[in-house]
Structures are given as C-alpha cells and as structure tokens.
Amino acid sequence: MKVTVGNDEFCPKCMEWREYDEDGKCKVCGRRIKKMAVQIRKTTAEYDLNDFVAEHDDEIESSEPE
Image 1 (cartoon, rainbow, N blue to C red):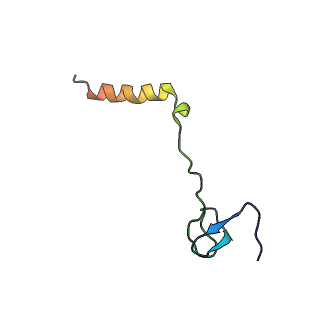
Image 2: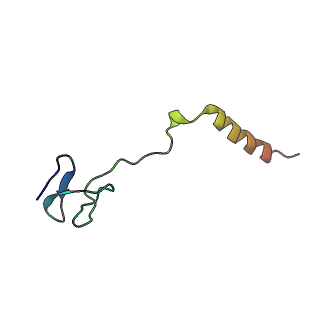
C-alpha cells in the first residue's frame, strides 16, 4: 500500500488512513474525510464602494414616485 505524505486522513468507515480526492472524499469508500476550504465569492474588503452606491441608486430611483 502506497501512502503519500500530506494526502491522507483517517477514514472512520474504512478504519484506516486513506488518500482523499479533490472533494475530500475517501478514494476507497467515498465518505468525506477531509474538510476542504470553501471559496467565498467576495469578502467585504473586496466590494467596491462605487459598485454598492450604483446598485442602490438604481433601487432608490425606481422606488420614487414621479
């Protein structure tokens, strides 16, 4: 059995140290054994203030009575 350092976690279903795929699932039984980082679309620091103002200006204009 070949085990690559850094690419294995203990699988409670197999009861052995197993390699996992890109989704964090055991390559043998398919159970998720590794929590993978979830990529967040944008953090608050990445939002541009001008984009925020432009979005809300459109909403305000459309809700004002003529």
